[in-house]
Image 1: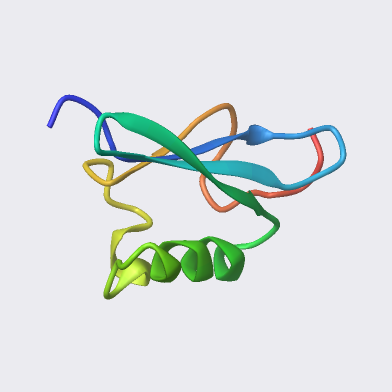
Image 2: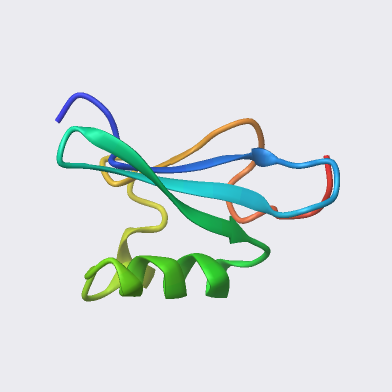
Length: 74
């Protein structure tokens, strides 16, 4: 794997972070997460069995443009 399949993008100016997943050769926007709970719900919806366990695993999740688990406005 050359990059993490899940990307949590930088916080927006209004708060929240866009979440994308790379699957089948393309990126799919899952939505905007405002908390770790939102992120877990998105990942469960895509079929991840235990998404809580991968949030801090850089092989699975890349946190861009801000600290991990921070969702407040930029």
